[in-house]
Length: 351
Image (cartoon, rainbow, N blue to C red; front, side, top):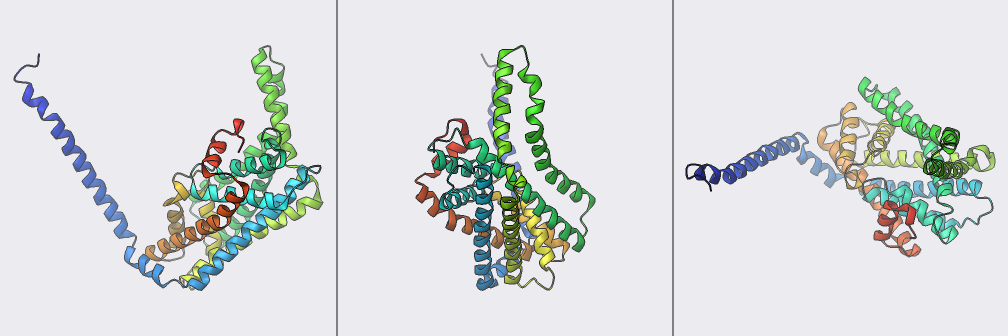
């Protein structure tokens, strides 16, 4: 039984809790308003309204061409890894476009597993046999992307020196694919000890992982075949060059070329790609714009115009992904729910 003298005290607790929540909400709202005021939203809106549509349309065209160049590169990588398998050009293009759309719209980097599963299903009628090999080809593309990022980093550093902390962050992000590559190449040998284990479960698991890594390494064979490797590298780097030009077209659309030139566009492309390594929001909204703000601030561009730049550039990427990805999704006869489910459960996927 509650003592009478304690009843009023307990009755005040819900009210105090609501008051505390209200105070926290007010403080957070104030911080958000303060942050938005520092972003010069008025100037951002003016910049968006006065942006040249012609340059933006050209950026869309360049971004679309870049996706097609990536498809050519991936097609060459697949032909090197699977010489005895028919490699329909249309299926490769559609799988890549579906993956690009998935990465652009959903956090969690589901684009890569999505395109792997869509193409493996198309080539094999089921996904189990070819998934590791196709995944290896995607990884080989990642290594070429690493080369492109290093080129962009060299261009960016020569134009505006990065703070030491930013250099360390860039180096860490670029090291991740190298570590993964080392694991793929050395993994089977490291698993030899596990295969010799006395425990049957450990031995079976080690054999299974070793088999998958061996198949994944087959996807890297493009680098040992100059006929395919040179074409794959050339078209992948060409795709990055087209994206670089698309970033510069947005600079021209906003009339920022007197402050930020092609080197700034390279730095922006580098920053937005590094910020997407661990995406935290759908389409990486917010983080994408923050990356643009940081880079353009180093070139003396105001926060309002930099925010407008980030909004337009991301809109160009998302619109390109939708224009190319939605028709591919319908042509492949799969739904968006199928893509999300197959990416989350690749072991049992049958898209």
